[in-house]
Every structure is written in structure tokens, then in C-alpha cells.
Image 1 (cartoon, rainbow, N blue to C red):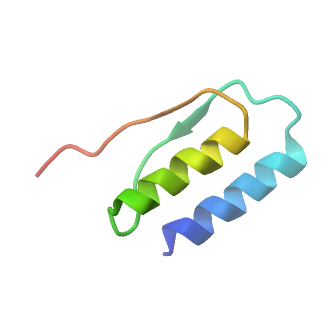
Image 2 (image 1 turned 45 degrees about the vertical axis):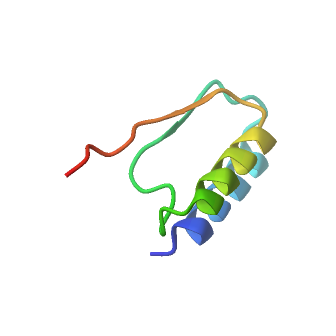
Amino acid sequence: MNTQDSMEQVVKMVKENEEVIDLILATGDIAQDASLDAYKNFISVMNELNAPFRWFPRKPR
């Protein structure tokens, strides 16, 4: 699964169906390649939604 494509689809659906967002809770992989750019993109997309957001990092192995 391409996490970028998946996130874009979810964000599109949220924008189309929700007027007010109380909280965005991200779980699982938010960056497929773990690059700095991928995480910056995640932050940018979350900021577009104008809602508080939190994510739970995966435990280190």
C-alpha cells in the first residue's frame, strides 16, 4: 500500500464530508519510506485540514 496515496484519499474524503474536525488521530505508518520529506508532507497535509492532530509513533524494534 502506498501510504501517500492512501492519506490523500482519506483527506479528500474528510474534506468532502466533514465541516468541523475535532481531532485527527494517525496510527500506523504515516511515511512509507521514513524520509524527512515524507514526514514534512504529512505535517503539511494535516495543517491543510485546520484541525488538531496527534500520532502515535511505532515502538522501536
